Amino acid sequence: MQISSTTKEESSLTIMKRGFKAGFPIMLGYLPIAITYGVLANQIGLSLFELTWMSAAVFAGASQFMAVNMIAVGTGIIEIIIATFVLNFRHFIMNLSMMNVLKAIPLHKKLPLSLGVTDETFAVSSMYPEEGKKAQGIWFYGTIIGFAYISWVIGSLFGGLLGEIIPPALSQSMGIALYAMFIGLLIPSVKKDFKVVYIAVVAMFIHWGCLQLGISTGWAIVYGTIFGGMIGIPLLKEEDV
Image (tube, rainbow, N blue to C red; front, side):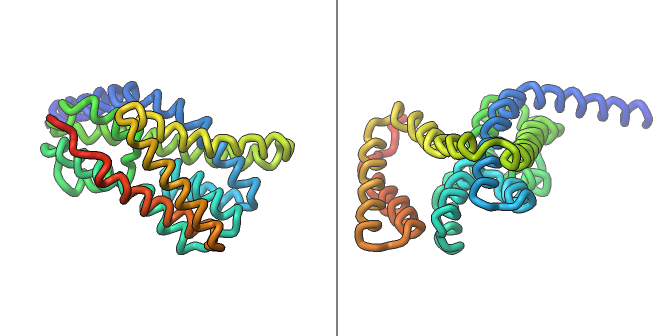
């Protein structure tokens, strides 16, 4: 019995090492973005606890950057919640796909993993579907998601600390990261289908029109996101298989 337990432990450790190796690029990518988020969040007045807790509870870079921008312009909590929900709705689709891959893993072990699925962890995990067929596959995906989560939270904390000591002019210049983040999300979709550009432009004009009508920035973002996305329904047809 002792040999069996040791073998099982070594097997789990080996799988975790593979997961760490597969997810290491995510950690490297998350740290600078998380630091930038922490600096910007500190700049708009969030406390170190608040900005770190947001990363720990939300764990969604694009949504956190958007929330920080909306908080900076005085947006209400309802608008921020709705905008975040709409922006993160794609996570439902990614989780459904992820859970389908992990058929060999019990449901009570898969559910915690769903909380850590992001664009990056989903993309990397999808490259290793064979791990989902193994009983110990939970350690592989859990390692990828766990270390990505830790790097994001630690990076946010460090960014908040850094935001208190760097010159204001430098921290304000880091605001460009907000636009770089959303452009980075847009470009892969544009490369796949140029019609996405039309959707983005329509959403932009809806947002602008709402502002001209005196609607608050927060609701303008919500309306632009929802109605811009609805325009995409007839434009983007299901891909031929």
